[in-house]
Length: 315
Image (cartoon, rainbow, N blue to C red; front, side, top):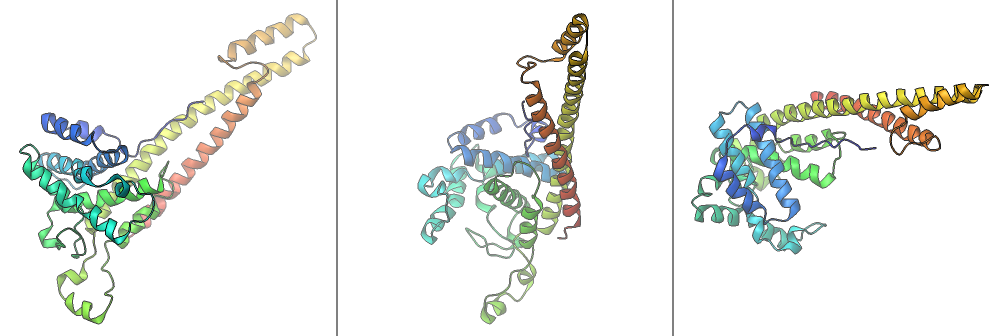
């Protein structure tokens, strides 16, 4: 029984833009990245595109921002695989090397005329509004809007991928992390508190408006997942009705006195059975369909509950 797959990042929005040669060119560059990083770049680009649409950005900026997002991790081409693909926590030394992917990616773009216009993606996506980011430690006034958008998309996908969500169930926990990133951090000492006096002291790492907009994107994604899952549930329900009819015919066949009647119901059962289903195994198949139906129904309930949680979150 084939289970439907749900993709968090439907590319429909991206297809609405005619990115032509530039998009094809930089996509070819992404092909040299490891599978995980390439998929991450695609996800971040798709999320960025949708965030731009929900933020009512114009088409030109959305195209530009989407390509910047595709290229944001291109510098990881030159990060050693032992660091890039390390499953555990990076050491301080390894993290310093990992951080260089921002400047490496920027330099790559600046040296390539086709990619130069999109160098903002690599250089700004780890900068934080409060100045705690890298590589330059910029603050809000110096971080362009595209960098702020890509940062939120990047953080969200990184957490989702790390936790390997198969569905949006539990995704509100990820959003809570991003909410915390919109809040000012606590100074570690009185000296640092004095240094932070001013506008930056009131800032978190992430733009709260963009994070709030991400909620809308996620809620719509959950709605789409519910629709897909409901369609699958409806199909399962039809299959369960078929098995119920088979069961009725079987009981009638067993209770029939005449051989003619037994054959009549047997033929009815054969018509209802699908390939690879037999009188001997259909009850087991029926059980599998019933379990799948109940699992997916419960998933839909949980997804609706997830929407309720997200709608109550405050940024």
